[in-house]
Image (cartoon, rainbow, N blue to C red; front, top):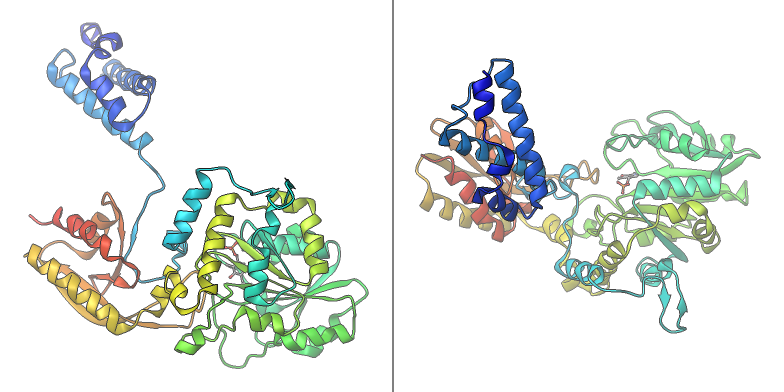
Length: 469
Ligand SMILES: *Cc1c(COP(=O)(O)O)cnc(C)c1O
């Protein structure tokens, strides 16, 4: 055993091997990192020899050195390859919560890159030559698009809800319908965020029905706010009643300093109802209902970067802007650049809207997806013999907890293989160098091209070709 331990090549010898520098260059890391992993691997070998469980090649051989470099490569790759990477979303779900929600428009991306790579007037007033505020940059644009009095952008909509409750209803009562105490994925529950904010939850009504008089009865001296939460990720049907926000506004007749706030969740600046999709009212009309404050996400149906947008009466927005927590929840310059570019698309009308991938993908017709699928299938059939490919009608989802009851008509490409089962194919696609995320239905792989760009076809085909023998 001692003999073996002595014949393990020493680190300083291995450092002279061209592989040492080669690995560092290949992965763009410092050679000290390679040194660390190499030492670690050698210690491991030593350990196994001592425990008499070593099963690798003889340590004095060339074979051992080759084996060792392979191990180092595997380790370096595991530690230093990019963990956050592009995936191809072939599920057809437009706002896939696990896949980063909204992809951005080309001009939003360009603006982000430009802003990130230079100095900017983020907090500098160019007209007056003095300190400015990041909160002023896109406020006007938001107001022009929505008709609101004032606006504030924070890190995400969860932060917006938290800030509104904390700044305007701390230690005061907030009345909310039991039917709207929802959980929105992960660990975001309206009731817990309220508790964290220090607002006192006052539940009214029942799970399925809440009436205006339930709210009236709950009003007290200590009431600060009535909150409505858009139940965006589920749909209640049957014997139900919720109070529309126009009626909630009438509660102010009973209590003049009452704040009426609606968390819209998604929030749309484009009227999808005109295309027969969903029942989501435009943000403009929600504001016209007389509500004091609304909030919604930047990266859901709006199709922009992650952000929480709060719009409403100036008196309240001013209080939010001055609140110390706002500093902790503020957005950075890249978010503002991406959001500004996205909002600009909305002001450019029809043509601009088609630049926003979320809107473009939701509006894709079944016929357009059929055309795409046929073109893809032609490429696929030219290349493969052992895969069987077909096309059939199906439905895609909007996703992201928005419009849960909407089924977008689509076509899916179904793939089967003579011998490989669907779960194995799914795994191979998921583990491809550009991972491809697909659905499995009836033991078949399904690709919905609603959310796939033509520029991704080659990556998909190469992932399949690694499976063909
Ligand atoms: C999605 C959602 C949120 C959370 O928004 P994020 O931008 O993910 O923080 C809050 N409320 C409702 C109703 C939502 O749908």
